[in-house]
Image 1 (cartoon, rainbow, N blue to C red):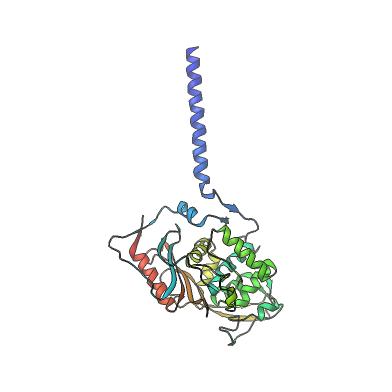
Image 2 (image 1 turned 30 degrees about the horizontal axis):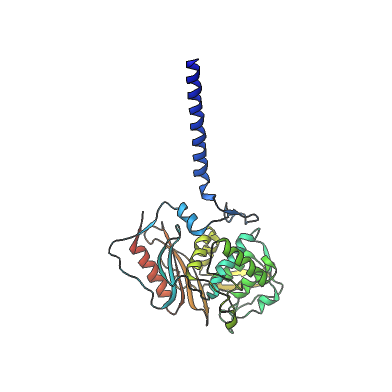
Length: 340
C-alpha cells in the first residue's frame, strides 16, 4: 500500500510538471501575437503574416537589442524643424524628440499610410486599378506633372488601367496625388470612405495624434481643415515602423526612376524619385511632403552604416533644411547609441 501511494504521488508530480511546462511553452511561443488583431484578405507574396500590433509594446518584445545612449553624449537639437523625432524601428524607443506629439499637417507623407493600406487590401500587386476622373484632374503633383502647373510627360487618362504595384511607384517615388487617389477609390470607392479606413487603421495602430482627411495629404490649404487634418512626427514614425514589414514599399522608395505602363500597353509614364539622399548608407527609403501650410517635411529610414543591423526612423515636419536635418539626425543617432 505504501509503495502504491509513493508511485501515485510520483506520477502526480510528473503530470503537474508536464502541465506547467506545456503552459510555459505555449505562453512563450504565442506571446508575440498576444493582443494582436489578425486581418484576412491580404496580398499573397507580400508578407507571410500580417498582423496589427500595439506598435511600441509589441516591438519591444520582438527585439533582443535595445538602444543605449553612450557616455558623454550631449544635447541634440534640430533648430530648423518645428517638429522632429528619431525612433529605433525595432523597439519603438524614441532616441530624440522635439515637439514630437504636436499636431501638424504632413502633406504627402500621408501617402505612406495610403500605400500601406493598398498593399494590405489588394489581392495581388498586379491587380488592375481603373483611373477615375477626379484623380486625373487632381491638384498638385501628378503623373506626368512633376509639380503643380508644369506637365512635361504623359499624364494618366480617365478609364486607363494600371497595376497596383505601378501606382505605388507613382505615389511613393514621385508623390503623385492622382496615383494615391486612384488607389484609395479602388480600395474604398471614394476618397472620403478611404479616409475613414485610414483613421480606423490609425486607431488600430495606437496613433493618438493623427486624423487623416484625404489619401494624398492635399487639403488645398483650407484653413477650416487645419484643426481636423493632422498627424505628428511620432505618429508618422510609428506608421513607418509598422510598415517595415512591407518590403515592396521600401524597395519602391529606393528606385531612382522607372516607367510604368497601362495594362493594355497603350500608355507609358515616366516616374522620377524626389529623394535627394538615395546614396545615403543603408538607406531604407524616404517620403517627402510639402504644402504651404505643412512646410517642407521628410521621413527617412536607414540602417546602421557599418552593419545595417539596426534601423532608425527620422522625421522632420516643417523644416526648410529637411535633407540636411535628416542626415544629421541619423548620423547622431548611430554615433550616439549602441545596441545591447
